[in-house]
Length: 211
Picture 1: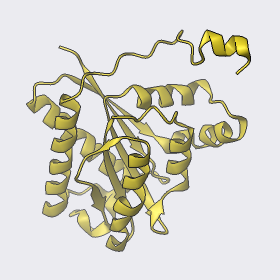
Picture 2: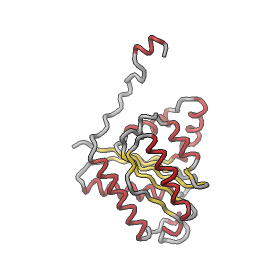
Picture 3: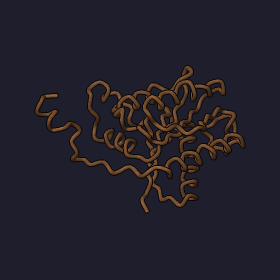
C-alpha cells in the first residue's frame, strides 16, 4: 500500500499560537479520516514562524536555504495540504503570503487543500472565502468545500485560545467535515511521485540556447 503524505502549514506568529493549535486539530482529524479509509499516511507540520527570515531572504536573493528548500519540497511533494493562517486586516498574514509566493506556481496544481484561519473576531471569517480560497484556486489547487475559522469564542476552554481547551461543538463538527473532505479528495488521487533531486528543471536544449 502506498503511503499518502500530508503537509500542514501553520503561519501563526506567536508562541503558543491558536493558529498552530487549529492546524494540529485539523491534522489529527484528517489522519483519523485517512485511517478510516484504510490509507497509510505520513504528516509533516511546518511552523512558518521558524522559517520567517529564510522566507524573506529567499524573496530578496532569489534562492532558498537548504532548510527552506526542504520545507518547499515537502509542500510540493505532498498529496494533501492543510493551510492555516491568522487573519490580519481581513486577509492572510504577510508571512503566509510570502511563503506561498516562493512556491513554484506548478507545485499546487490538482493538490487537495484544506484552508483554515484564526482571528480575534468572528467578523474576519469571510476572509477565507474572499482571500484564501481565490489564492489557492488561482494556483489550480483543489480546495475542499468546507473551510474552517476559529475565533476566540470557538475554544470552549475559555476566551484565551492558547489555553488549548476543547473545541465548541460547531467548530468540532466543521473540523470533522473539512477533514473528511480532504481525506476523500486525497484518496481519489494517485500518490505524487517522489521528487528526483537530480532532475533538470530546465531542458538541455534550453540550456544550450541560453534560456
